[in-house]
Length: 300
Length: 99
Image: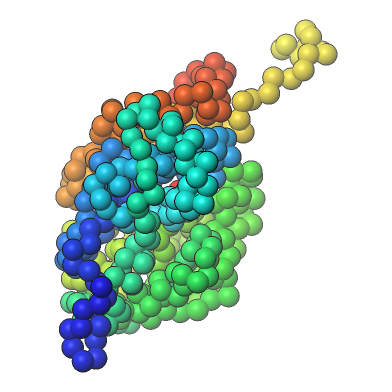
């Protein structure tokens, strides 16, 4: 639904739409500032969020899927069925959960036989999934449900002067038509911050290589990534993936001098700061790499 | 030891690569890949979140349902093999960053 609010600005948001919030594993157990920031910004922007009670791991799109596709698709379908039961689409704040839930949903939609098999398993726990759920990334919720103009108007604390290197993460490039990396960049700019370009933008942080060779992943992937980012001297890196977040922090802790540490910030935190929330309300002191440099730069 | 006594014995093969074990075991035992430890539960309340999120971290029924779905799959078999070969639950450092 498109609501015209002025002659020049279109707000695309459907006020009656609600999202079931899918938290995943890493965010509620270690990157708790992301959950807090999202809840704060959703309330401020009027995004109706319902907790997806009883959700489990998505499950993860690599290890669990490799070990048992059967278990992976069943558990993903159960998570989708929870949202269907409360008649909500899902909002995902983790790139890995996005991949699993999006792919599982697509696979179930494209194969009636698979859907029948999965529903046969779900019967054991008295659940069913009828393909009635769409899965949205937080980037899509912020960018597509609102408009950049609308978001810009709501920025209470401009982050002008903050130089940001974005790291979309590999999964956001999966479907070029969705333009998720471009939307991430536009959302960062909407806060007033400047996006600085660097050559290693598309370079993987190294997480998938961790499953085969942790030393290679850290020394040949994560290190190259962090060197690429640091070469343009940003104030921080902004991303939306908890695994990339963890890996980039690991690389900094391994290869960068403490005085040169660069904060790693989630998009939700950046937007929450722009909406006027204080770092202590978001829980930004929980980060492993201190975020003081960003907080000082934006004058908070 | 067994290789010295039985030089022709086939070496014991782990049920899964070491970095996979913690992920698979935690998925089966807590319904999530990462444990929510007491420190983070306290930090959650300090920053204004519920002590436990409304997921399998809080609801045993969710874990029971996930375990039912995992029964008779390769994950259940691997977890049983891991329990037999390793005994103790994985430590945090044994689990790679996964999302």
